Length: 318
Image 1: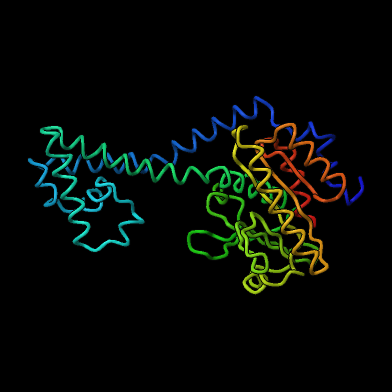
Image 2 (image 1 turned 90 degrees about the vertical axis):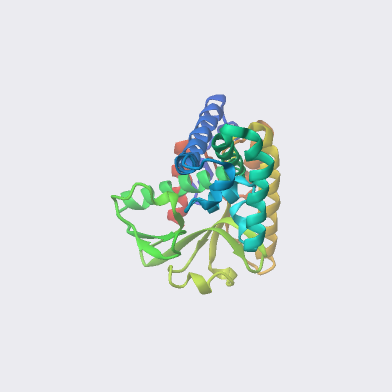
């Protein structure tokens, strides 16, 4: 297989890229499970709030219970982000409005009303985070596939924690690295490689879903602005809903074109690739044509494990 046609390792035609009905259905199930996983902390908070608030004899006495002031503010409809911009007096007024307008009219059921309104605000928070879950799940899947490719090749790696922004040496006994990793770094055959997710490229002034650099993790902080160190750039679209597939591809196509032009102005041509979960017939044909004419270096359907593995092995060997 020619080195300049890596997509032929796992694709035979545009039809290979199309997401099947079974894969779409499985994707919706995975999203539902992830939503339930993310909702668990909110449910536990609601249970804790109910237990603490149950000692109150009246709605007004809720403000005297230690340790539930933040929850009362949430039940008032104030998000955590909004609370950070409010003065103490504003917070107290919001809670007082909750008590007078909603809890007191509820009569003896005021604790249940409090919990319902707490969950209502938390549900909005969850909904906001779920809008980006497709991209997060795509990133996790690629991270795990890259780690697997490195591991079977006996190559050690580091991963960048999004929690504390530090590079950590990877081990074989950590099954949840992909939940926290926002970057990977390794060395092989005297070459240093670092992957960084969701990076705003300075000379593009736009976010790129995945960038592969010719540098070590220590050098990464000064490598962002050097175009010559970019080996590959890719767009990841993890949304599974077929109704949004074309729009996701249009966004990715525009981004990839912008990347291509910016590097061409500098007489550079890094590898460009696309990975998507929802790929319909028309966009599959367009992606295939770009692969065949060299506009795209590689592509894969995120729902096909073999395609993802093949693409990640290609990345690891660049």
